[in-house]
Image 1 (cartoon, helix red, strand yellow):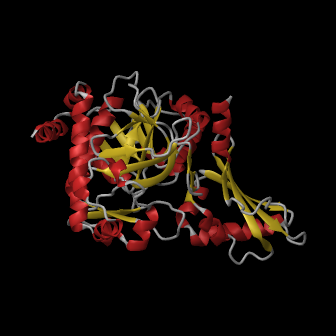
Image 2 (cartoon, helix red, strand yellow):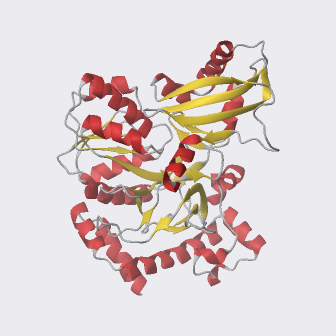
Image 3 (cartoon, rainbow, N blue to C red):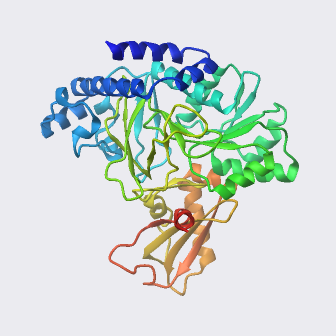
Length: 447
């Protein structure tokens, strides 16, 4: 009964004007949100056990009685993975009628993950996004330009819905070349700009050369960014750059930064977060359970992102707890200026390249402005670096249009680095993708 009352209050809060919603949620007691989380988890668990072919079979095989489960951790070693989505297909997870669908923008496999949603879910996520954007300072008289990629990506749809509730002017440019955006944006005089971080870095370089206009804030999503690159963007525009964190599987934002930029304030209203088996620093793979999805709920979904949960209050005063900035991934997928890339991408661009040995390794670096991809390839002395690099770039252009578009936009640099045969493998297993940006960040933390 109490939980039902709390949920009704939350429903009313989400339909308030964003300024009233922020004030109300900030005075809500933590126990109320926790009680609602547990009730929604039990309801979601019963829903998937009844209607999802995948979960029904998994629970049967594992002898899990969902009537006895009160908390996600009581499911033991059961998790949902990205491989489950690819192997079984989205249809095996459906529990209701879908109105729309999106696909993952990058993965360790050439097979994308498809995720289905309802318009009601889109509306609710948009309302919650509006509350977060209002907290950052976006108002109805602001002029917003978005350069988010609209190809199968969920973020533009959620942003569009959120701005609708904020009632501000909005132009959706899509992910066009930064030079084109820079020239055309002046006509609209936007004071808020959305885009992927690497794209925003390139836009800032153009603005530094051609002149910036007054901007209130910039907002990035879809990939990480170094603090050095963030400072470059902010210095050019004279405005803060905030980041969000999310996945297509989560239907967009799992959390977003506040003005202090000290972690992502997490969406505890719509998700149950866990970090099982943490290390001494509290870091582990982030696992989340959706709580308000009626089309394709996910139970204990493994994000493959290593981070930690921050329960201490933030100095900004916002009610929501936080997720620390992602440290690395548990797989070999890397999110960078090139896009979301895994080993299979580099295997494809090396296909039919004469003279490359069985060994290669992709190293992701950052030069202070943009990401640099160095594809280290063991080459026989008779093969020239320039010739191999031209073939590799031609394969990239023909096989990966999105990655090539980012290359043409100068969102990253790509080089083939020749290596002596037998020099790359020092042990039994060679790590194919090495993110040296994460190593540099860890060094700074340790120092």
